Every structure is written in C-alpha cells, then in structure tokens.
Image 1 (tube, one colour):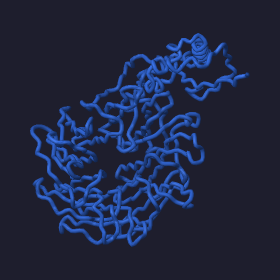
Image 2 (image 1 turned 90 degrees about the vertical axis):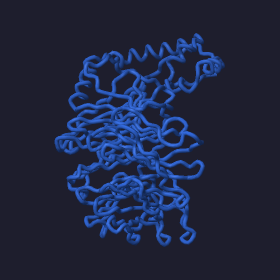
Image 3 (image 1 turned 30 degrees about the vertical axis):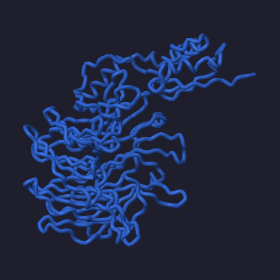
Image 4 (image 1 turned 45 degrees about the vertical axis):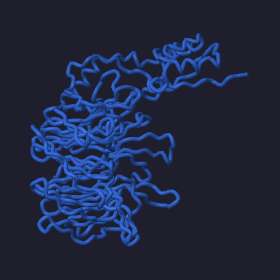
Length: 528
C-alpha cells in the first residue's frame, strides 16, 4: 500500500529577541483575574487620567481609580448575576452604570470617588423596563442621563424590546420617571447642552426604520417619535456620533437578495440637528463579513472609519483584515478603502482596529490585533497627514512569547498630549482564556526606536530554509523513533494548551513511520 505524502504546517520563528534598550512604559491595570469575553471599559477624565471598570470572576465588578486603588461594586451578601457596563467621568469621580438580574432584573448607578469614600449605589431601573445589558450613560450640565434597552414589551403595539430613559439630577439622588422612548435593540444617542437625541433601529407601523426622539433638558420632556428613513435588517454594528456640528448615523445592515443578503456599511448625516438627512454607503466593501466598526473624528471635519472583516462568503478560508475609510470634508466625500497590510500578510488574521487623533494636528495612530507571528500581537502605524500616508507597521511588544489582543467592543487607542495610550489584552498562556488588561504609554519616536533596536538585534538565519529543514527533520526523526516528547514540544502551542502531554502520548503509536522525505517547501511569511 502506498501512503500519500504527509503534509505539515510549520510556524517559523523569525527573530531572537533581546530586551530592548528602549522598552515601552507598560502597566497591568487589573488586580483580579479577567476571563476572556468579560466586559470592561477604560476612559480618560478631563485631567487625562485613566479609569478602568471590569468584571472579574463570579460577576464581581471592580473599578480601578487613577491612583491604582481598586473598589468592588455591587452586592456581596447575596447571589448575583451582574452584567452590562457603562461609565462616564464626573469631574474627579466616575459614574458607573450596571445591571444585576438577581433576585430580579435591576439597574444600579454608583458614583465612585477618585479619593476617599464613595456613595452607595442607587437602584435606577427594574420591573418597569425589565432591563437587558446594552447600557449608555452620559453627563451634561451636571445632569446624568441613562439609556438602556429592556424586554418589558408593549402589548398594545406588539413590540417586546424598547429603549428606556431616565435622568439623575445634580444632587445625585433625584430621579426622573423611567420613560419608554422608542422600540428597538441598540441604544444610541447624541448628547449636548441643547438636547438629548435618542436614535434607534426598530419597527414603526410595521416597517423597519431609523428612528429618533428628542429630549429637551429645560422642559424635561420628550418630543414625538420621528421616522428618519426606512432601514434594512441590521447587525449589532450601529453608531451615532457628531463631527464639527454634523450628526452621523453609521451601521452595517443587510442588503440584496433575501435568500443571500450581503452586509453593507452605510449611514445618514444631518446638518440641521436631525430635521433633514442625507444617505451614503460604502459599496466597495459590500459583502464583507464585518467584525468591527469604529468611527473617530477630531471634531474639525476629519473622520476615519476603521473596520475589520473577511470575505468568507466568497472564500471560506478568508481571514479578517483591516480597512480604513477617511474623509477630509466632514463626511461629504470618502476615500477608497485602504488596507494597511501588504497582500502577502493577508493570509493571517488581523482584526479589531482602533484609531486615535494625536498632536499636533494631522497626526494619527492606527492599531490592530495581528496573528502574523503565530501568536497575536498588536501592530501600530502612524500618520502625520490625516491618514493619507502611513509609517511602516511595528509591533507593540516584541517579547518572544507575546500574546497581545484587542477588544472588538471597546475603543483601545487614545492620544494623551503628544503621547499615545493603548489598552491591550495580554493572554496569560496559550489556553487564551484569561487575560490581563495592560496599558502601554509611548510616543511615536519611542515605539519606532524600539522597532529599530529590535531590527539590529535580530538574527536573520532564524528564518532560513535550512533551519526550517532542520526543524522538520527533527520532528520526523522523533516520530520514527517514537520520541513523542520531542514531537509534542514541536507542535502548535495552542494544540499543547488544549491537549495535555499524557493524553497526546496515549493516542500515539497506532501508525508506525519508517522514513520520510521533504518533497517541497512553500513559504507564506511565517508559515511553511
């Protein structure tokens, strides 16, 4: 019997990394264990100091103050099932908004002091809305506004899911009545001193629509619901934002044949605070399977939309990649989609981009999670001309066993003065289940000096074909000799994390190998 050639996929270690002489400033922010997928959020206050709120084990909710101290929020004397999280800085303090569904669904609001004792939490929602986990919080003129979606339902309108609203007065204790604002699932708004304008996607008279409703802070009342436009079925990617006085709604919906709908990034903008709207769409990415969308504006008419997604419906093995659209005229026109990575790297996953406008004007930083080196890392590019051109991409952390990821639900890039901050998820091991939230702080010069230092210390022979052949020879000689400790050590680290050695060893030996031959080697970057 003739056996077919055994095809193997090998990872190639390209670099031997020594400690860089220009190591970046980094700090683990969480004091408690964070499991992958648990909600967290990071914000800067007016003094550019960072607050972190996150969930640990058993739904424990923690807040890290700018001075590094932590406070646990929520019930400690009863069973709890806390979820949902939104925060807003309030001077030197932080307002935290969350949900607990035990013993029944309820919403809580607590002001955490930047120093000293904090006020007890307030119950701000419950049976009147049966709240779920999508929460929003904002502050304007010392009044705190809360927006969420709930499943109380409205039998008269045959709609189960609605957006609900409540305000908290300046004293932090006086609450307005809970109001059912609009049908819908995705709470969005634009809040300024003139009004709180709530946006929703939902059904109005049986038709899927983009909807809005305006709250007047002076009168403390909502106007009537307004239909903006008909709308397609939506994904969960839906944003409302303001840029230089212009309002935007941006979403990923489904268009085309009902039997084979395609995702499409599209939106609306208004120059008169929602009285009239104009539509736009990005046809070049029609059919992309979107995994993240983030719009960022400098408030002066420059907008970048960062996206990740794959063409998996056209090519099942396609990986996520990063795309950018830029507008220099406040959304009147948009650039062609730009992909920061060269074509040869698109065989590796890249996702969850985030953008920060830096200083002086025109400076930008783009980051994304990149899997080009087997384990994930965060890659960074800089621009000094509003994104028209970009520097070469460099890794955030060149450590040999780096496992750095980003978050698809959170903004992860900020500018602080003439420096930048990134909040990355550092996986604790190759099991990829527990993470530390790490803050990196650096200037463009510092990161590029680190990359240059790394390049000087690299050993190109590590990526040679002769070394790869040595590695393959070692693997197959060990397989022939039943040296499974060696074959296990040469296996994929994620495979080793999922399968202990004793289980691996017990499943070996059913097939005996007597010889091997390297027929050919095909290289794709770090894979062969």
